[in-house]
Amino acid sequence: MKKNDAGNEAANQRWISILLTIQTLLFAGASLNRLARFSMGPVADNQFLRWRDFNNLMIFPPLTVLVAFGFREILFRNGGKRNLFADMLFIVAIYFLGAGYGVHELANYLSVLFKNRNDIDPVLREIIRFNDDDFSHWIFFAAFITLNVVMLLWQAANQFRTKLSIVDTILVIANAAVLSVAIYLNLSRGELGFDLAVLLVPAALALFLWTKDKKQPVYIYYFFGLWPGLIAVSILKMF
Image (cartoon, rainbow, N blue to C red; front, side, top):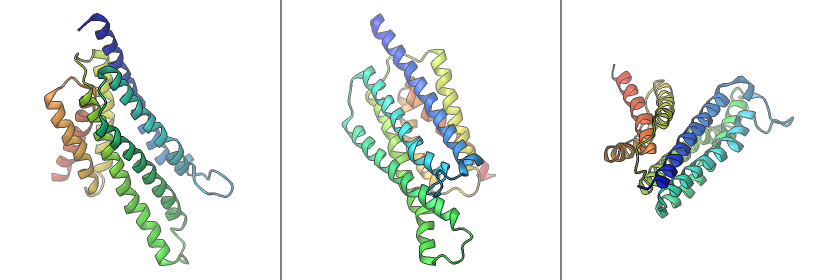
């Protein structure tokens, strides 16, 4: 590898580390938005949405898509190989992400708003509950699986030839650790349901790809981000 090529590859690896950090910050922001009390206030006087719902519709999904597109551009700049199948899946993932949030946020708001109202028609109440608890989750799960599989496929098409630097390795592992802890905290409460199966799809692909090439940053992120959390939850549930 020429010196200039090595320098460009190192720069691309650093950008991948930076984008992973931005992705982690977005995840932390979305979690804070979901849990914090200040996001429960109405956006406008007509109370059409809470700030929690508005942020989940208008802020976090577009930023998530932009970060994912940034991964694509950096990886393509590194290898120069387009994956048409992955690109098509990415478009589908964007639609599912928007549809999932679009259905869930309004349904969840209405569910909370009408929670203590006994005069609501049972059919309407069931429509709201189904869209809030079931249908919107299925769409979001489809988006989650598709988007994360796409990330792995983009990396597979445009692989780095050199190992990560120590700094970039630390950044990738640190971001993976945050993801793994989040998985444990979310799945350790209550019974394991469809969430586990959803996470196992990208986890299985990450495991397969990581065993073939352990120096690719996206493989490292997903392998160490998904498997420790899933294993810890499994052990907790067994005992």
